[in-house]
Image 1 (spheres, rainbow, N blue to C red):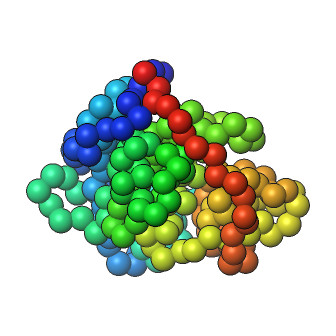
Image 2 (spheres, rainbow, N blue to C red; image 1 turned 90 degrees about the horizontal axis):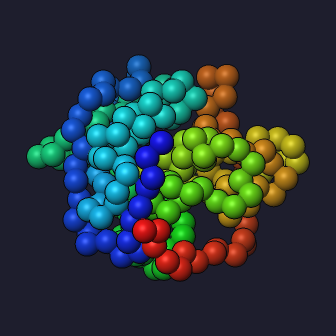
Amino acid sequence: MRTIAYPYDGPGAWVIAPVRSRTLGVSGPVLRYQVAVEHGVRGVPAGEFARQVGRIFADARSWPGQGEVRLRQVGAGRAPDFTIRLSTPGTRDVLCGGTSNGYTSCRNGDDVVINVARWAHGVKGYPASLAVYRAYLINHETGHRLGHGHELCPGRGRAAPVMQQQTLGLHGCRANAWPTRNGRAYEGAPGAYEDPVPRERSGRR
């Protein structure tokens, strides 16, 4: 596994990933997404990040598995419906607007912003592997672009909905990276917890 390194504040310039994936999903409207990695992020080539995103979306438990949307990656020079950006913490604050903590990821307009600090290190105490947490990040923030709001834990010991803010706390639920279970949408009641948000205070070099 490559070591991931990055400055706290990146330049806000991007490498657009080449396209190597098919249209994902079997029914529903097609949304085109682009994948971009900020200059200064080392150890995550744009093509590799795009492949990881594509593998997450291709899983039957991801959003296309619900049969309501198809996702197609597009490359440079094409007009996407949204862009998944692997961003430094400082640029994350610029893109997310109004939530300057350098810690979380977000969706703002047509930008799905994945904070490289969370992609590289996850969150302390998250009771699942980094691979599971990364799938959660992609599915959660993409879920916002698809129109889904935050959701609550449906009961102690149950799987957390993917739209629960698992980065900040599980509230008795189990970690879960996927919006689809047994071919059906898995959801909780609408709402959000008032969990404190840590701050990312320095870059990883």
